[in-house]
Image (cartoon, rainbow, N blue to C red; front, side, top):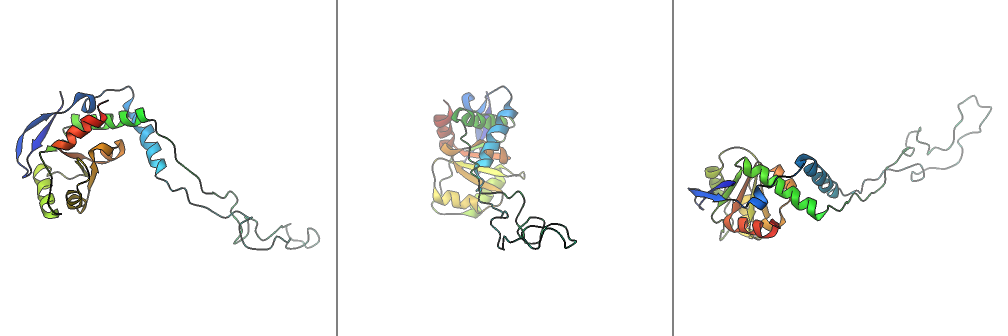
Amino acid sequence: MVTAKKYNANGELIGEVNLPENVFDVDVNSPKVLLHEVITMYLGNQRQGTVQKKNRSMTAGSTKKLFKQKGTGNARVGTRRTPVRVHGGKAFAIYPKDWYRTIPHTKKRMALKVALTDRARDGRIIIVDSLVMDKPDTKFAKALLGKILPERGRKLVVTDGHHLPTVKSFTNLPDVMTDRADSLFAYEVLKSSYIVMTGDALKKVEEVFSS
């Protein structure tokens, strides 16, 4: 059974929580291969694919032969758009491309479980009883993280739903990311050294990703 430390809203340790085994204690064959495949596809999907270079047909300039083929003593030459000339087109120009690849649902979910399992077994998942704030308070958020996670490293704060004051309080801090419990992804879990979850977020994660 994998456990995680539980703190109250003031950063005081109040006990431990048993994490769901079907989400935080999962073993698969070749986990590194699975994570590499899913995260590579995910990062590829973030590419805009709008870069473009001009080939010789896109550059400005005449297509007339600069001078006759023979009799001048110079090397033979074509138009001024040729790639070997200044301001000519690119020989193998790149064009806009759609890099999107559909990530299989089963693989995406299993990769998330593998990533959460790695963090849970290393003791890098922290449960906080509640993080509901009436208004954005970055000072309180910084003090709370300083009490429960004094170590350096990128932190991911997971909440149940998009509670705007809470999200604003933590996103003002450097090296702190926030996300909803029902939209977690393997990349952001592996990108973070520590994961801070509310009690409701933990229930939501189990509800959404346990199947």
